[in-house]
Image (cartoon, rainbow, N blue to C red; front, side):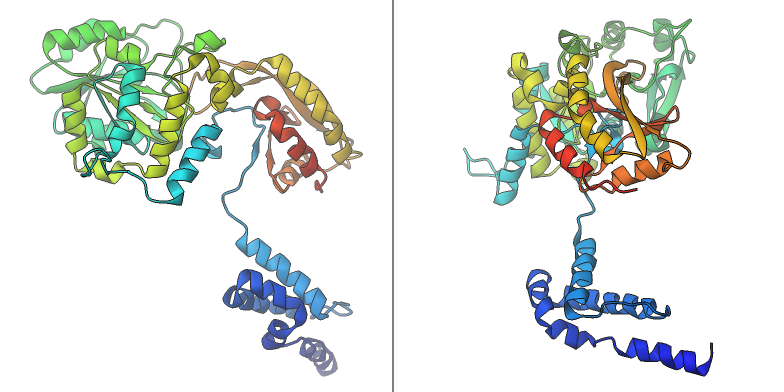
Length: 473
């Protein structure tokens, strides 16, 4: 670059206002009032630095008026202060999507959490005696009512529940598990790893596809701490298979004086077949079959907040609660408020599908989803006019989060296909939907971008339509 060119470039950069001048302009006054001086000053420096770079281009034609700089400043601050955790529209076809927070909470739970957050709460305070209380007492009575358990405690997820229960009842001793039940959950998190962290020794019995009662009976010895039965909630073994019924295991455990622990994983409190869904084992059934402890998740089929529930015999739960790890794994008042509200809905099973979002979405008939697809189809076609073709097709939703891995639910999807070779790629289209005011998440499969509408509630349809007006690719 010649000396003359360098001088011209420097002259252009010199026209930039100072940080103090920008902060003192009338256009920036309202911005200061909203974001404060410290945050606004940092953003001004960032904006001026970006303008300085842009001025290096010849004939940049930048508008450096106070109003133009203020407009850039608003955009910079809005980006910096935008929440990282955002609401999204889950049109992926997976109802209980782990990456999207699993179960959506009912309004009763949302209100309970808000109330618990506003002021102090009797988290560990006994209002009757005026003394110290036990936070588990907030939900243990209703869990006993709904499952028949003698006692209950709550931790932050089901992996923690399994870890805590095993560490309490079996540390330094053997735990008998079928080879066909050594599950792996998301993130390569495996049952044998949890057992190792709990200080237990894994005693495998049977084979991957067949385990018999005699296998358990022969493995029981002086080092046996308990028998662990794991519900295969995120995979299925088919063909030449055999596994031992819970009731048989319960009878064997009682006969040999060994505790039986059952990990149900996804945690359905009721028989879901009454709503036309695949049947799942329930905690009440596991306890009736002789389980000493039962563990399961709060944010899967139960439809509540992330939590791990441990139910069972009074003395076994008392031992779990005394474990030093319990304090490290306990939940806060917001989780307990949400959990109590969700459990309360189960007292009225006749209206549960209307009031519990998870069950409502899972039991939603395909005809209703097709009707929703017809209502929003025009908005999709208008937003993608000339860039893509949109049609309605039958599809199959999955429950998700390790629940009923092979079962599918009849549904309907809006299917987006490219309109010619010059149209935006499917990846670009999918990314554009993620940039909407409320990100819309679908999935690319079979050379199309697919939006399964099972989880699009009627109340969200208008918001989706408004968001589509901002679609740009």
